[in-house]
Length: 167
Image 1 (cartoon, helix red, strand yellow):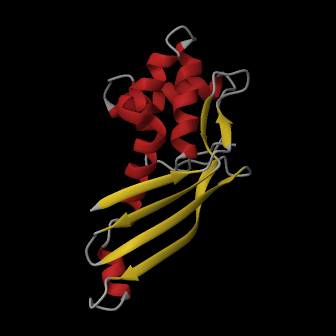
Image 2: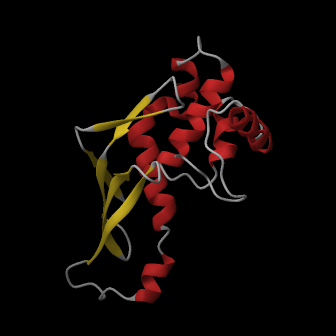
């Protein structure tokens, strides 16, 4: 499978009030080709009210001479995981989540934890609290405590249990 991410030149600064911030693309198109059973194109755009990139368009393309696009086959594709991996790799680069922590090593740890959480939400991560811990090389189970501390400090908005909040 070949994955290409075409990020917009326009960016959005993501981070807690007063910083630090990371720039993420305001939109991106992810193209997955040479994949089985279909090629895939996904466009995501920044939604300010949600504080995240959200899918705006998905196109499935059957291979020439291949089987037609069928719902049963679409359900077999791990689109969510592929999209998350592609966006994270494109935005974070080879340093990954730890790179955010490294780039802001001179900033208060609670602020950096808030930053990692908000970037994870912005990239529509499946587990943004666990991502905070992983960015620091810790057990994912320690993430919720770190996020709670950032939320208590007013750096992350309140949310409903089980729902990530980036706004």
